[in-house]
Every structure is written in structure tokens, then in C-alpha cells.
Amino acid sequence: MKNLFSLLVLLGWMAVATAQNAKPFVIPELKEWKGAEGEFAISGQTRIVYEQEQLADVARAFAEDYRQLCGGTLTVTQGKAKTGDIALSLRKDTKMPKEGYRISIGRAVNVTATEPIGVYWATRSLLQMAEQNTERTLPCGIVKDFPDYAVRGFMIDCGRKFIPLDYLRDYVKMMAYYKMNTFQIHLNDNGFHRFFDRDWNKTYAAFRLESDTYPGLAAQDGWYTKQEFIDLQKLAEAHFVDIIPEIDVPAHSLAFTHYKPEIGSEKYGMDHLDLFKPETYSFVEGLLKEYLEGEEPVFRGKRVHIGTDEYSNKEQAVVEKFRYFTDHFIRYVESFGKQAVVWGALTHAKGETPVKSENVVMGAWYNGYADPHEMIRQGYQLISIPDGWLYIVPAAGYYYDYLNCPMLYEKWTPARIGKEQFEEKHPSILGGMFAVWNDHTGNGISTKDIHDRTFPALQTLAVKMWTGANPTVPYADFDRQRKVLSEAPGVNQAGRIDTPFHKDKVLPGETLPLREVGYGYQVSFDLDGTRETPGTELFRSPSAVFYLSDPISGLLGYARDGYLFTFPYSVKQEQVKVKVEGDNKSTRLFINDRLIEEKVIRKQFISPKDSMKMVPTLVFPLEKAGQFKSHVSNLNVKQ
Image 1 (cartoon, helix red, strand yellow):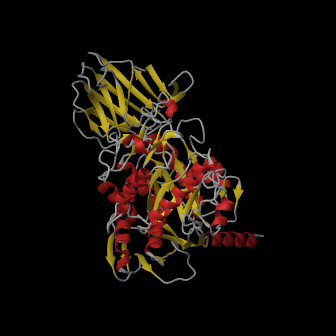
Image 2 (cartoon, one colour):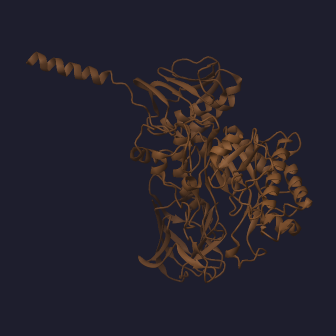
């Protein structure tokens, strides 16, 4: 019995000693993993060695991203790798799907792919593995990874709400970190005229891109220069993300009819272009031409979206004209060497006028507008973006305020379009996309609120568009582990802080080490007050200002995204303890631990019949102190 016990102990020890590493947690989940023993430690001696010159930029990006995420400096060099190095190389591999890659982690790390994009995606996986442990180790083993779908996307509505360029740049980086590769930017749209006295002239509408052809067309409350938009696309290219610019016509076009009223439709509403007027076509052609012509066009990518959705179908004559318009601008975009992308509308607009389908991409968003089986039969390539699954409309009360991530993780893939289930990796389904629509213009939603809704969805859908139908990690485990990962190297839109922050005294005009603190925060400080000039700031960041005395009423308050919110308290000649708390539903002010006001999401009536929610949230700014006269001390920030 003693010998048997000793044998069992020995066998158990051997089992532990030879245990192979479990698959590392990465978003999206790795397709294939063969575990080995041991770990590879990244150290100051680790080099990133690239073989082909085509990988120089990928190697340098990898080193910089590692520095931002993990704090270490890795040498980048071209040549032959040795033990302890991370080697990047291109290899012919007829069995490897496009965008796929292999990683072998042992005494060295060897990354191979058929194209630079595959090597780049491999570095995203390595970065995620490294950032999850302070030792910066990688589990030894072999990875083979590749996507099920070619299009893995996100669409943001910049028309109804201006989205700052820095935010778009951060989203390029976030998408790339999770191997999402398609970013659709919806450049024009308008609010609902029922919220504007049912008067089209008062209804909010915006086009966000500078135009020389039509000076003054770009919205004055927020727009991008052509050079800024070009630079955004160049950044995306460096991160292997395709930007699809969208100019939405002939509906959702109030920004254009505000500018040129004669092309608006009096019959169907001024958010509709009049399809029977020649000047409508010349206007849209002139706009598209400005961004598509030349050797270095403003729209750099391979695809351009022309909208073509939700136009009236009350009369067959207008249906036929809508179909003609759609076909005309598909071919017009193609004449500049681009692939046209359209919204699915041709079941809703069923008619006899032919619309080109060969090499045309269609967003399959609602089966009543475009039956996906029929659109495939006609020859369209589909992007699965079903509204009942993947539409976020913040604080609107319809579609989703936050996507149902558990349901999506367990039940959705791009092969599911509405209620229709297609075979996985159907050759006519390019992939999937989710969307944020800012329908309720003026409802107080901030870009931080949008991010709070989109980032969990981005992480979740990155899995389902890459890994497909059968992730092996249970959702509860995925949801817990995803929160450990960064948004992207150098990106922190959520304002996450790792440890509480304290400062004995805040001096006017000084810069603090924290940019901001996100939802679930508490900021407190002692204030030896003096009456302040209206407009006196306590703190500001690029996205918000917190006032000791707001510019209008001289009250304590805050501004962000063009909105000003104030509390019923003004700074006086007194010593008080101030505390501000905030989450994704409310912002609260306490003076001497007494609640002064809790600003919550509330309904406001635009008319006796029409109401809209107002969202008063705040991600608290901390980057720069204002020029105040009061004394601020004992600053504490926690989350």
C-alpha cells in the first residue's frame, strides 16, 4: 500500500509537471490552440525582428503599442531572429485563409502570415495576452487563427450628433485592437420634424464634411475638413481598418435641401430629395465628384456608401424613380473606381426599373425593406446589420439603448439576418456590422454615453464576426475577462483609473496626471470659497468642463457636447466639502455630505404629444485646473 501511494503521488506530480497551457483569453477567441509547457517572458532584451521590409511598419507599431500598454521598450530590427526574440515574417500558405496567421510561442515567438494584415492581427493577440499579467509572459503553444467573415464592422451616425475627430480616431484604434476592420461613418442626417414644431425649416440637419463645391454646406456646429478626413483614413489604413464614408440620399437629406431648397420634395417631405428634378442629380453628382475625383481623392477607400433607404413608396411612379436614382448613383460611384454600398430597400421599393446588383454591397437591416433571400438571388453581397439585433438608439425608448450582449454572444452571427438563418459563412454574406443611430437630436447624449453603449458591444461582436457560431468560453466568463483588457493601446475613452488619486492642494492652471474619471466615480475636495466670475472653471478635459461658476447663471455646473447643466448652488465666501458622484444614469452634487441635487435621465415634453429623454451624465474632467480664486484642497478621486 505504501508503494502504491508513492506511485500515485509520483504520477500526480508528473501530470502537473507536464500540464499543457490552456488556451489564452483573447478577443476575438483564437480559432485553434495547441498548448505546450512553460512561458515566454518578454523582457528588456526581447527584440521584435521582422524579415521582410513590408513588415517594418507593423513591427514598429507593435513596439509602440507594447510600450503604451505594458510600459516596456522593445528594440525593432530587421534580420534573423534568435532565442528570446519575437519574429515576424511572411510565408506562402495556401491553406491559410485571408487575414489568418500562425504564432508559435516557445524559446522564441514566431509569427507568420501570408499578408501583413495577418501579422498585424497576430500582434493584437500577443498584446492582449501580455497586458493581462504584470509579468508580461506569454503561454507556450501554437496558434492558428483566421476570421469566418471578411467584414467586421461598426457604423456611427455623425449626422444627427457631431462626433469629434479625436473620438473617431480612438475608435479606429479600438476596432483594430479587436480585429474589427470596417468603420462606416454616416456623414449626414436630420432629426425628426415632430420635435421641431413639425417645421422642416426648424428641423435639425447636418452634413459633416467640408465642401468647396457647395461652400457653407458643412454644419457650423461641427464638421471635418477634407484634410482631416483624409488623415483619419490614413490612420485607419495603418491599422488595417477600412473606412466607408456614407452620404445618405435621397431620403435623410434635409441638410441638402436646407442648403438648396429647390431640390426638396414638397410632396413627401423636405428630408426627401425630389427625384424628378434634373438639378437633384447634378447636385448629388457634384458633391460625390468632389470627394471621388483625382489621383488622391478625399474618399480613399475601396467602398463608398450612397444611402438609398426609407424613401416613400406610396406611388409606383416614385418607386420606379427611386430605383432609377439608386442604379444611377451606383454606376456613378463605380465610374470613379469605387465599390458602391447601399442600404437594403428594394423589397420596399419593388418595381420594374433595373438596379445594378453585380459587385454591389447591401446593408441587410430590415427584411421588410429588403428580403435577404431575394437580394442574394438578385446578386447582391450582404452585410448583416439587422435592426432588431444590432441597432443602438441612445435613450430613445425603441430599438436598443444597450445591446443585449448575452443574447448576441450566444445566438447571433452574421448568418442571422432578422428572423432568417442562413448557413454559416454563406458566400453572399460578407460579414456583419452594428450601428449607433443618434435619432433624438438634442437629448443630451454625450460621446462618453455612446462609448458606454458601444464598447461592450464591440468586444462581444468582435467575437461573433471572427469566431462565428461556437465560442468555447461561456458568456459569464467572457464578460468577466473582457473587462480586464484595455480599450486599445493609448486609448481610455471610459476614463478608467486603476487606483484612487489624492492631491493635497490644487493650484490654478496646473495640469493633473488624470485626464478624466469615468462612470461609477466619486470626486471630492475641500473648497475655501470666494465668489467667482461667471465662466470660472474648476477643471477641464478635451470632452468636458466643470465650472465653479457657470457662464450663464454663476452656478456650480458642467458642460459637455454643447450642453450646459447647473446645480442650484453658487460658491460663496465659506468653507465647504464638495462631492460629485456620477454614473451612466445620473450626476449628483453634495455639499457637506448633503445632497443638493441628483440630475437624472428625465422626460421632457417638446409638445403636448411629443417627449424626449434628457440625459445629464458627466464623465468628470480632471486634466487642467482653471484660473479660480478660491482655494481647493484635499482632492480625492475614486472609481
